[in-house]
Image (cartoon, rainbow, N blue to C red; front, side, top):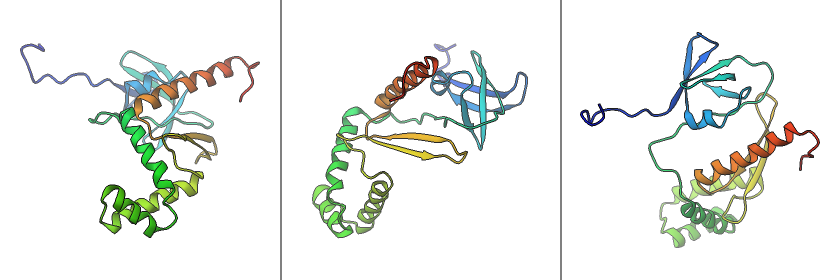
Length: 194
């Protein structure tokens, strides 16, 4: 079929999500997101929190949970994720930009010299965005500094966000390593949290 029909659409790797066995179809999740989840994990689909009860070859069976805690699902776009090299350059730019956030005028002058940005509106928008990030977390994430942010979610549960300029490949690996460490500590209550 593949050789004779060049219009064949490949399987994109989505799992259908059903409420209970034989229940209604709720939506779809990316296979990588499903792979990284465990039974009992909670995630947000639409505006509702669901709990994973079972993962089959082509579907995820969920229930309405009680309690708190969610994971936001992700979907892959058509573009290639940010490379490590580009992430390093972006981090270097943010590190340099941080020292020029003294005033909007100073920032625009620097941005004009650095990247030939003539438009004051563009410079002002970037200045505001970087200042808000700095005000929120105390620092910008750079090629030399990752920023950890902790905040209380809408359901009164704690979230930890690691801000970094590096790309998805590094972030995915880091998320899996951190998840494994947390899981190991939860399973072995004798290990202290650090």
